[in-house]
Each structure stands twice: as structure tokens, then as C-alpha cells.
Length: 392
Ligand code: PMP
Image 1 (cartoon, rainbow, N blue to C red):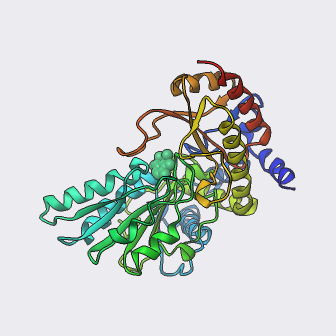
Image 2 (tube, rainbow, N blue to C red):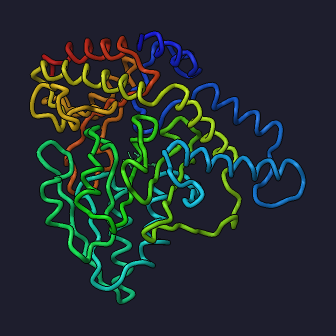
């Protein structure tokens, strides 16, 4: 049943259908776009393209309405319980979104002696801006303390250590929904439970949106930032969602500049597409593909799967890979392995994956899948990796 559903989805991606010899396995970097997203952009640009938030003629009004509708679409997709209250601000991606929150919100809200909790080895985009904000505050005479949130042995956040890190000076915690190297769901419920009701939690949802259900009501977070392009929208798209409670109100210049209107149109279309495809089912599919690859690698002595101490029994949430499996060959360097795989049509990421300074020190190969990938692609990849098992 899941296979038939998936075949129906796959045929909606022109770049996938048009390249049958290629297995695109780098969706954590950016996702491919379904025809419906391309159609929405072409339709917008060929029928009513204008600037937003200004103008009195129909195309301009329609563009303004489309941007506002896209904001509602983001709220709906994130399960926003209070859409009249929250704010949505479109950005170019997660990096820009987190940076804006750090620069335009956090620095204005910190008082001397405040503490912010920041993960030790998330994506750099979720590390550097907070450190820069703390440095800027210090320069302005407002010293704040950065408290590092460590990982546990399973590469989840160290939820046992967290309660002792939260004090009555803690104002803000930055966390990630799904880890971009280990692929685990980082258990955000437990972050809120340890933080208590007053701390602002900012979620980097770059690898979560479109991959598994994400409800702001359920997770009780205050900022969510994600990249539209990883959720099947055009490059240069993303959004900040702000709850407008606990002081998490993000009000940058309104219509002060020209927004990326066609990108925003693509984002609304992509979220529609994901909703129709069913994020719950996408999660089941990509977890299954990830488990298949991890299980196979665990049987091949030459490979080490990062964040996985033993053969993957999909028994604890963090051992489930949400479409991301990262590994090394014990003898073939990861960059070389990346080239070997690319030559055979497997497009993967091979490097250090932008991890912050406490992250993995040596390069690795990351396979990341989305709704359009198939079991056959994983099996063909495993065949090749099996042949390489004895080499190097
Ligand atoms: N956070 C995480 C967890 C990511 O995986 C990425 C993208 N690799 C980013 C942030 C940055 O996203 P973008 O490049 O779209 O700004």
C-alpha cells in the first residue's frame, strides 16, 4: 500500500523521472520539486506577477494576498493553535532566519546575567548566531552566559543533564528538531519539560518540516525556523514562525522590502503538496528507507554508521533515522567515497556537514532521502557499498 502511494508521488518529480540512472540522495541539502510547485510558480509569474504590499491594481493586490495566504499556510502546516496571534516572516532559509532572530530579537531581550542554552554540535546555523548575539550584548555592556547543551551517547540532547542547566536566569534555548547528521528526532517535548513554562524555545526545523509531523501546539515552542527549499519549495525560501507569546514576537520591517514573491508562492504550493501527500506517511517511508540502509551497513565490517553503536533495532525514537544516514568507510576516505558513488549515479553529500565546532571532526558520507526515493535505490546503493566493503 505504501509502495503504490510512493510510486504515485515519485512520478510527480520531473527531475527524478527525467534521470532514471541517477539516485538523488542529498535531500537534507535541498529537496527536489514536484510538478505542482513548478506549475504554481509559472502560473504566478505568467499571470499576476507584481510587487507585494504596495500598488492599487489587481496584480499587486493579488500578490499581497498570495503572500498573506502563504503565511496562513505556514501557520496551518505547523499546527498553529492561535493563528490570529502568531507572526510569520519569510526569509531566504534557516540560516538567515536564525540569524535574524539572534540579531533583531535576542540581543534586544537579554539583560545582564541572563543565560541562554545552545547545543554543542548542531548545524553551525544554530550555533554561530547565538554566540555572536552574546558577544554583541557583552560589547554593549550586557554580559550574558552561554550554557552548552551536550549530547548523550545516542546523539540526542543529553536530557538528563538538561534540568541542571536550567536556572532562574535561563531566558532562551535553541534546539534542532531533526539532526542533520544523525537524523534523530531530538525529543523537543523533553526540552520544554525541563525548561519550564517561561523560557523561549527556538526550533531549527530545517530537517523536520515535510519529514515528520511538527505541531507547535504539541511541542510548545516559541520560534520555528525552516528552509522552504528543503521542503520542496524554490531555493531562497524559508520562514520564521513566532508564537507572539513569552515575548517571542518578531516584527521586522513589515513590507519594508520586496519579498521573494515567487518563492513564497512556491512555499505555499509545497506545503500544500506535502499535506496532500501526507507527512505521516512520508515519515514512515523515509524512516523505513533509512533503517534499511543502516541495517545493511551494520552488517558490513568496513562501515561505521555515525551515532549508531549497534545494529539498528528501530526501538527507540532517536535510533530512527528521519531519512538521514551518515557513515564512513574505515579505509576509503569519505571524499573519495563520495566521488565513487557519484560516478555510479548516487548523489550524496561527502564532507563535514557544517557541524559546529564540537561536531564530528572527520568527513563522512551522508545519504538523505525524501518521498521520491525508492527501496530499489537503497538496495542498489547497498550492492555497491557491499562491493566496496572489501576494498580500500
Ligand atoms: N539547520 C539545519 C539542521 C540544517 O540541516 C541546515 C541545512 N543544511 C540549516 C540549518 C541551514 O539551512 P539553509 O542552508 O537553508 O539556510
